[in-house]
Length: 170
Picture 1 (cartoon, rainbow, N blue to C red):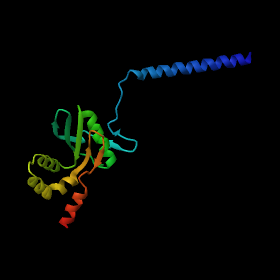
Picture 2 (picture 1 turned 180 degrees about the vertical axis):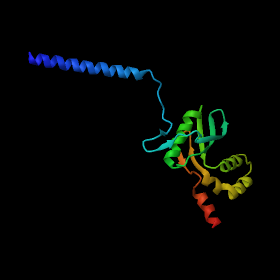
Picture 3 (picture 1 turned 45 degrees about the vertical axis):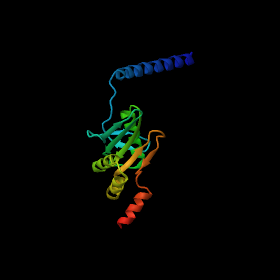
Picture 4 (picture 1 turned 90 degrees about the horizontal axis):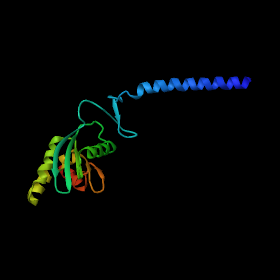
């Protein structure tokens, strides 16, 4: 008899707790989800503060039948390879309607110079442009996401040619 009383009391306490918890849960179930304005987790290791200011700006968009090419000015302090790759993938998911290449610049003038190079017609013009501008653009093209393999290149123009030009300047 004593065991039956303890069992009934235990059942009653558990049932009461369940009812109370159900009531409290239902009270918040229909409330709109609240999003934090302080931070936005972007990776297991990387956190970017969410502000009223955009963290990137679209500078150019060129479209062919099969591919889009975008240039963006990035406005983030953390310009690590990991963070820029994450940003390029985020941009891709938001902006690309088809296969696309994404160039991330940390300087508007470098993006303009890169666009200027693409409009040059002769090898002489291209070589002259490279002598004057390659190092500058290489120092400010922070990342490039290539569409076919989704390979992200970090400061892709800092290559052997960049090193050769830098050595000539010294």
